[in-house]
Each structure stands twice: as structure tokens, then as C-alpha cells.
Image 1 (tube, rainbow, N blue to C red):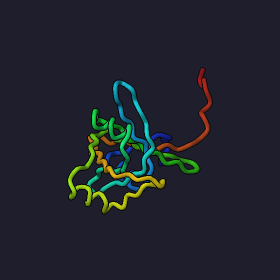
Image 2: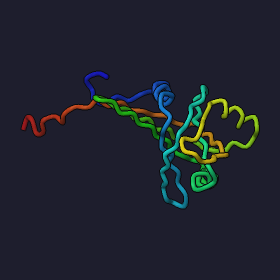
Image 3: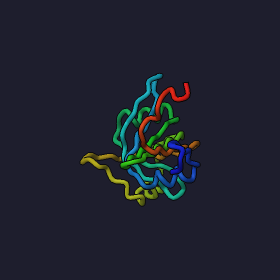
Image 4: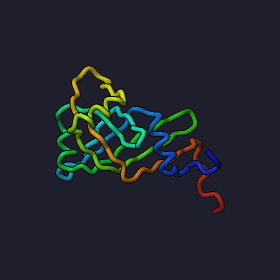
Length: 142
């Protein structure tokens, strides 16, 4: 990163960084209330996000309101980045779609059965990088 401690990433760089991680946060809205869920995910070569889930709140929320946000962060010693995807989620129904999603080797991290595959089609992807440092001196020049 350069002298500016905050850098905006283009969509290509944001997707590149998304492909390096496997844990993100899904944000849904149902009946006017936002919900946030940690999910492990995979990114397809076409740039779509996939996760698996059991029956429950996540699946119900995206069925009622498919517009979602998905966020992934990464922190290192002296820098960090954050990517936000605004998109549309849907449960995969056809065998061919599910078989294609299974090729991504997406497995639950905890020993639970998750039969439902969900695809998020990005509509807008943005990201920012941050360089850590001390806060600048306040009120200089006054």
C-alpha cells in the first residue's frame, strides 16, 4: 500500500482477495430486521459465492428477501482489508447446479448436515485496504 492509509480496490482486486479466504459474514434482512451469520464459503471461477446451510433462519430469510450483503475481512500485522459484496442469494434446486457447486469442495466446518447449497450472484463488489499506524497529531496548525 502507498502513503494513503486507505486504498479503494476495484472489483477485480476485490474478487481476487475474496478467493483467498473461506470465512465471511452473510447479512440478510427479514421483516425489517438485519441478521448476520458467519458462513464458510467458496468462490467460483465465475465470481459467484457459494455456501451450504441447514434449514433455518438463513434459508428462510433469503427465500423471503434474496437481497443480501456478504463481507470478508483479513488482518495482518500492519495492514488489513475488507470486501463487501451486494448481491442476490438463492437456494440451488437443480441437480446440475448442486453437482457444479459440489465441485468447489465446500464442506461444513462443524459436524452438522447441511443439505442446502446457496449461490450469491454479486451485483456490486467493493473493497478497501488499510495500513495500520498511529493516529496523526491532532489540531496541528492551529
